[in-house]
Image 1 (cartoon, rainbow, N blue to C red):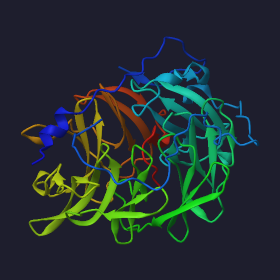
Image 2: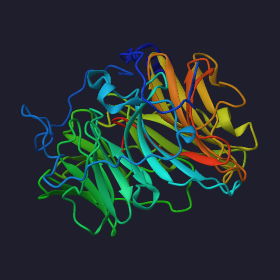
Image 3: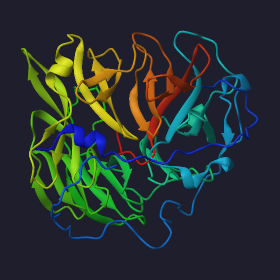
Length: 428
């Protein structure tokens, strides 16, 4: 029988991206202070090649681009950030994050700035931000659909159409995706092609040139759930297959849309969140506990050879009457971090660390936020205001829950409106 101890002990260390000491001209408002299991199994071969290629990825740089704006708001509203030219691109991995930072005043304060802006920052695992580009508020994106695994491009939400941001230059363009779509992502592992969710909830794949390549399935969204990531698709690390959270439950399909198998679901309303390794996927399900349902996390074999393995039990969360359960997890070095969910509507997401023989252990009363990224020594969370507070912050913690960096705005201003991990699965 597979055990969670094997998951924890077999996690591999990621490389830590180190920053140099150079800084940009903006003033300071930032404080700084793998594989889970191994099995021998035969993977069913997908019917098409993955998006791997021996030639450079060029499809995310269309001919028509828009240069970034050079207008900036009042300096005291901006974090102390390094320039885009200083990003160590070779070190950017899944321990990094992209954030959209707004200088718009929060609802609790009527103070306005002369030039309200949104700035895109690439944030290192130690919390150091690098300024990529900025937009006037009226022209700015408001969300992040996906960040390419190499960290050099992102799909942003701006109006009804996505915006493709080249993080290496700050230039933006329109990706070749049809108009009747509402969610967008890069294929894996390189991000050479695109996926899109249509308004009819059909998942389609397009080439970098905009040609239709495959229909991958239909996505069912539980509109009443506002507790964490609801990803329509999650690519396997090889790019040859993916899981679609479809009408009949999670299904494993090839990257040509061929159905491989339905995944075993150990609860109700199960939803795949991520691939945990080459075989297992991380799944969230509702599980009964003493007259109510709570969210639990499982590792499920995509090949159907082994039964689901529980990561968190119903009792882990159900014993606390205000806990709705555990809704997401990330691997950081040899540690496993879990995101809880407190009382629907509160917007409070406590963070836990899984301890062998104990279970989830809260990192602290104030350690909270939606998990964005994790590395060998840090974990990054996006915390939004709770209970009437209007603000957003990207907070970096060490593995013991000590805050070591925070990207946020002065009191009365919003701060981080959106954040997304590099290479993490696409979310609405």
